[in-house]
Length: 74
Image (cartoon, rainbow, N blue to C red; front, top):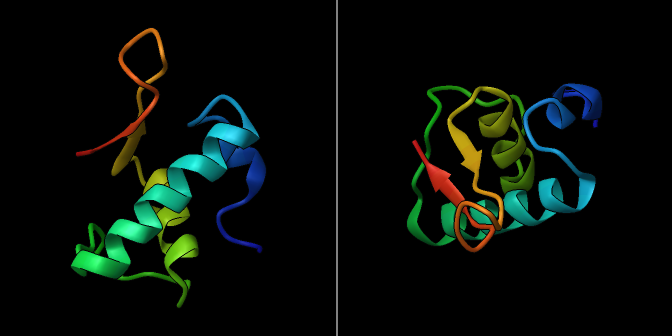
């Protein structure tokens, strides 16, 4: 995976585990509901699209101190 880079994604979400979890949950939601947040994606796969949304600040992660560790759509 070249875009977005893992380094740029880790500035948005604090750990690789959280990043994978948020991207997987969002990818499942996109696949079922066809709910896209960006106008154009580089990736053809849903996980790649979810990572692009995180990179574009369209998807945010709430830590366990905030709530239950889930993501929120903007």
